[in-house]
Amino acid sequence: MAEGDRRPGQALYDALEGLERPVGLRVTPVDCLQNCDHGCTIALRGGARWTYVFANVDEVGDPAMILDGALRYHATGDGLIPWRQRPEHFKRNCVARIPPLEASDV
Image (tube, rainbow, N blue to C red; front, side, top):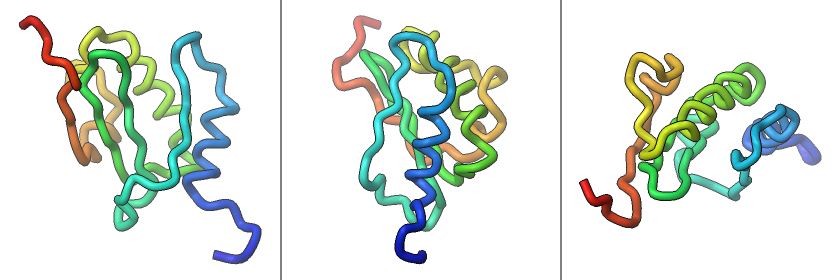
């Protein structure tokens, strides 16, 4: 990468920051998710929800898809988006699904 070029993850963050989001849906940059062999990687987490990690994200073509998936995730109480309602990219590029830190009463 040439000096001064934006890293793909930074370009993705910048694109996501430029999209209108509802109150409560935040985009937080991190230095690295240790998944370099699989392109840009994002994580969806919040509250008592399951955390999801998705790879192979295209910083140019996928910001709207990520926002759509994040909105669906945000609308759940537990983070579990019904399979048929997930963006196709989420169905095929899930790296990890991590349980909430606090156990539910289920």
